[in-house]
Image 1 (cartoon, helix red, strand yellow):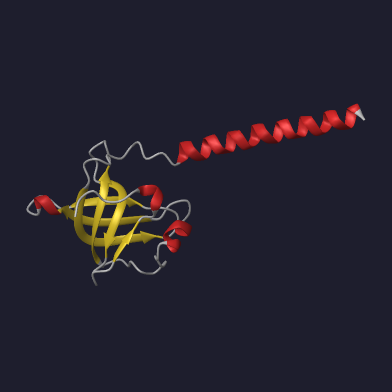
Image 2: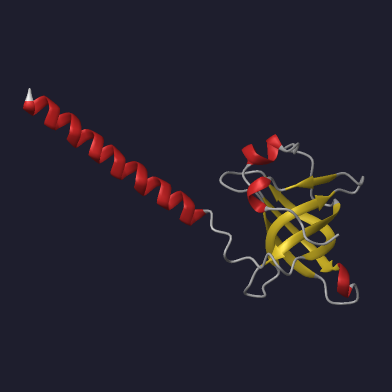
Length: 141
């Protein structure tokens, strides 16, 4: 009996360590530390590519910061949530296409490179979509 109980405890202990390790790596992977959530920007431009993939959806676009409309056009890489999260907040895999003009509110990269974490997208027809709860809401309009 003790050998059976010992094996059960050992398996439970191993399973606990595996679960803890997976949880830690999942949290580390989904860190938003590289984005500046306090100083969000609004960018308008044309979609170059829309990648509906796991673990994150990406929008590649050429655009300008709305506050500096005379500034140079830049190529932005916008990170979005996963397809599953976006489906739950109303997105469809084909709602954004290359050539579409969109406006995004993003938490820009702290590095200063043109890119960021999506907070909200406004499509050409005026519909607005969030990036889901984990990304947070925009703090500008």
